[in-house]
Image (cartoon, protein in one colour):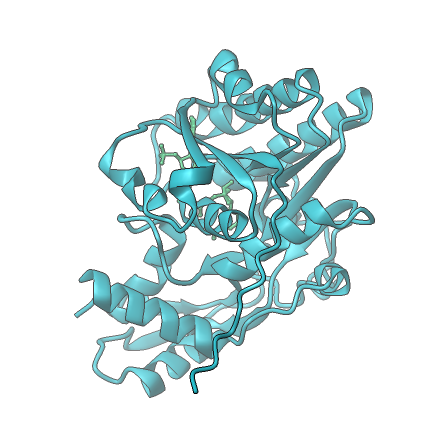
Length: 331
Ligand code: NAP
């Protein structure tokens, strides 16, 4: 006798928008939203382009995913995508894997002005709740905070310090999130921010994103002499789940740090070496103290209390390496 297990699909039937739908985190978010029965409007810069084909192949995409062309700096394009949605997941923001000579244009302006454009379009469209993907970049970098302080949602990076140290990404995320909270207070828009640490996990999109590149470099022994710094890590599927949890739970409010594991680089490499001895790995480590961003005690308790149960680090590493082998990114 064959036993069939019936899958209970929770059909929400609600229409939500995900900005930057083809990105690493957003692709998983779109996948989970479709699996849960949502109608999804995804904004992308190049609909029909190779980089978004993976979205069209997701289960439920044919019936319930609509991709719309939008740029963060083009308010009208965002309004068109958001109008008619009950919820918006604002994940789009520039994440560069290299330094830039034009941070204002390439990082800061799209992050800050783009977020305000999204929020204004949400107010006009009477969106019920907005989930914004912020970052630990908006939380960690404050030289005045005592190094042994447990970092929680009350902590903010200092934008002036970010500017002085040319950490344009952290600066863009800090100011974008601060401006978003000011906007929410003035307008009454229901806003929640999710602040993930380093996000790793299998990729759905065709190209390698900046955070997964960190792991690929370690597997390729780059650099040979590596800083043994603190790394706070969370799985991309947990980050996507955190967004949906915060959207669906009426009692969710404010900021949520989204992090699961805290390890030093050498510990991370030791786990990888045990699982995959065939790769090159860094040869030597430089012990660094806790610099302002390499903080070890970052608390993911608030999200855990909301119901997020995070995956084991080893599972994340196995899934990412197998995914990269399958895609030919790793041998
Ligand atoms: P990603 O794969 O590079 O995704 C970034 C997305 O933003 C892409 O879809 C990109 O669109 C879109 N985007 C950038 N500039 C845009 C613009 N001017 N107009 C419209 N769309 C634009 O990176 P990710 O890791 O998934 O990051 C997603 C979000 O999570 C970001 O807000 C990031 O700050 C945050 N975050 C990531 C991590 C991490 O470790 N990965 C950690 C903390 C927070 P295109 O595909 O067209 O370029």
